[in-house]
Length: 405
View 1 (cartoon, rainbow, N blue to C red):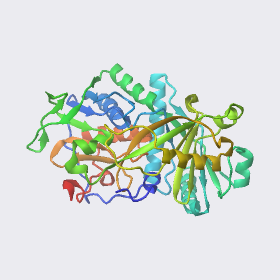
View 2: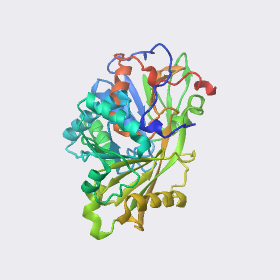
View 3: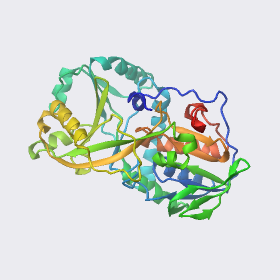
View 4: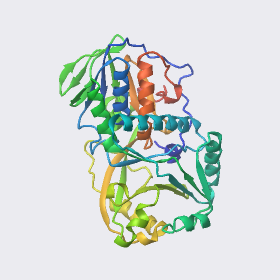
């Protein structure tokens, strides 16, 4: 289903419907239900509320819960998407919103540590694309040779690497804390939050007439489903052949005491060699050295998946760790987190109206890189519902995938 892990790094343009669709706008004061309190759903609920809608936000287990794709301590926030300028510019807009959220809540959420991009010789073309986009937008960066990087980051073995790039404004977000901050602000500003399992209701005359919350019927004027990996289960007729939900593992290794300061001062990093990606966030919340192998795992059910670490994945990460960060060779595994990606074939998000229900907006397809874009997806969704923005074909459900074709 997912052709290449590059879909996360630099999504391809999606061939959606030729003519942009427009959601049938809803007047201010309309009752809107948003299902899913992760990054997409939480931001959408907050921005709809600020646009004058009467909004109720639902989640089965709570914002940033351990089953969700928006859970866990940290997520990278990087603007670089190869030569994809769309997502680069979306990230810059999202940064402003994350900063505003920090101010509104008095909560530190975004850490501008910079991100160190490391490429082998085959990655030079991608690196050149990144540099071109950064120069066009005056985005601050530093280009290093392997020799220069070795002096600056002696804990890293530069074997096999060519040039390296520091994306200076990038860094990481505190994910679980951010989801709860959004929910708290949403309630403070007058929104209603409820915990419960939601199922789609009746489709009649081109609209959805109701939903079921813990098997009790509830009606609204409009519905937004931002359910991450559960979008496929709720709407199998649309997404069974379009979204793949894959198992992804993140591991935390104990840093030897004498090296703690050295490793915790490293910036987050992304390493691409032989077409494979590893990434890490050292020293976040004193959890240890966070590292993940970004290859897509097997398809799973996000509700019932066994979330114990797979020893083969751990061994793959340990081999890479010993090679690239030799002082961590043999470091103990202290914790693992198992989550999931809701992947689209091209890595683009889904922001589209249900083909049989004009009052239902579907948000998803985060594909492993969606969290940081939550503010912008929420902004787009709010604009669509109030009729000020057409649906973008790049985020559409292609007609050859809907209906299970």
